[in-house]
Length: 211
Image (tube, rainbow, N blue to C red):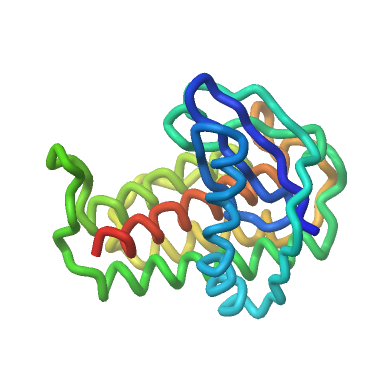
C-alpha cells in the first residue's frame, strides 16, 4: 500500500506519494492525477532500483487532501501536509538520500547523452537540454535556503560547486530530524525531501520524453 495525498488547485491536482520522494504527478481530476501517478510507477522504479531500494507500491490509499497554491495549477506541489510535522526517522532519511542521489545521476547522465535540442510543444515553446539542467541547478540552490543552506550562485557546469551543494543537501536530508522546519520560515525535512526529488525527476522525465 502506498500512502498518497492530493494537493488540489483550481485547475490541477497533484497526487504525491508520502513515503517515496519524487513520485508525484498531476491531473485535471483526482482520478486522473492518481492514474498518472500509477502510470509513472515503472519509471520511478528505475530510479529506486539504481538507489538500491525495493519499490513495490501496491494499491494507493488517499490519506490526506490539502488546498493547493498558485504553483499547484502549474503542476508543481507546493504545500506541506500534517504528516510532515512528525519525526523524520533514519529510514526516511536513508531513502531520501539514495533516491535523491539516483535522481541526480539520471539528470547528470542526460546532461551528457540527451540531444541538446529537444522537441518543442505545438506552439514551439519549451526549453532545450542545457536550459533545463541549469534551471534544476538554480532551483536547488534556492530550495537549499529552505533547509538552512546558502550557496553562492554558480553555473550548471561548475562541477565542484554543484558537488558541494549536493553534499550539503545530503548532509541535511540524509540524517534524521524532528518534524520542525529546518530553518526559520523553511521546510520540514519530509516535505523538503519530496520537493527536491520531485523537481529533479520531473525534469529528468521531461528531457527523456522530449529527446
